[in-house]
Length: 291
Image 1 (cartoon, rainbow, N blue to C red):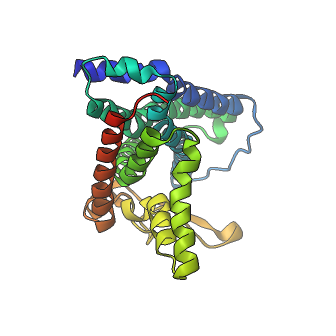
Image 2 (cartoon, rainbow, N blue to C red):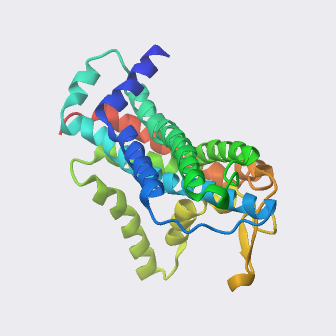
Image 3 (tube, rainbow, N blue to C red):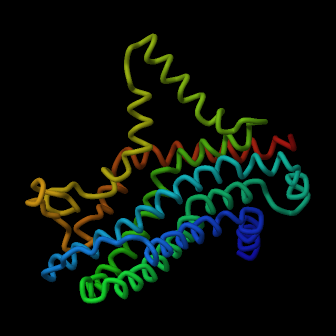
C-alpha cells in the first residue's frame, strides 16, 4: 500500500497538470461568475427553482467531465512513452518495483485518481459559483441554488460516472497504454492510425461499417448504457419555444442504471478486451527500454 501511495505521489510530482488544469479551469469559471454578464432567470415556483439548480449543477459537472476526459486520454497516451523518452525508465527499473505494478498504477491514476481530482474541483467550483451568483442575483435567485438533496444526488452521480467511465473505457485505456509502451515517436498518430486503417480497409473492400460502429459505440455509447432513457425519467425537454418545459428525474436513482450497465454484454466484452490490452502493455513495458 505504501509503495502504491508513493507511485501515485510520483505521478503528481511529474505531471502537475493533474491538479493545475482543474484548478485553473475552476478559477476561470469563478471569475466568470464574479465579473461576467449574467442573465437572471425569473424563478416563480419551487419546481422552477429545482429545475434551475439541476441545470446549474449538471452544466458545471459536464464541463469538468469534458476537460477531464481530454486530459486523462493524453495522460494515458503519454505516461509510459515519457518514461522511455526522458530515460527515467532506467531509474525505475533499477528499483524493486515490478513493471506490472508501474503500469497498473498509471492506469489507476488515469481512470480513477484524475477523475477524483476533477470531482473535488467541480464540487468546490460549484459551491463558490453558487454563492457568488446568489449574492449577485440577491432575491432573484435567492436559495434556488441551495437544494441539499440535489447536491447529494450530484455527488452520487459523479461517483457513478467515475466507476462506469473506468469500466467502459478500459479497452480504450488499454490501447492507449499499449501505444505509449510501444511507440518510439508520434504516439498520437499511432493511437489513431490503426483504427483508421481498419475502417478504410473495411469501407473500401467490404463496403460495411462494423469498425466505425464499434468505435462510435465505445467512444460515445456510455450514456445510453449507463443511464436510463428519457421516458420522463431523465433530463429531457418537451415542447418548443416559450412552451418548452424541462422533464427531470425526481431522484438520481431514477436516472442511473447500475444493473443494466454491469450486465450489458458491451460492458463485459469491453472489459475483457481491456484486460488483454493491459496485459500486452505490461509485457511491452518489460521488454522496452529507453528511446
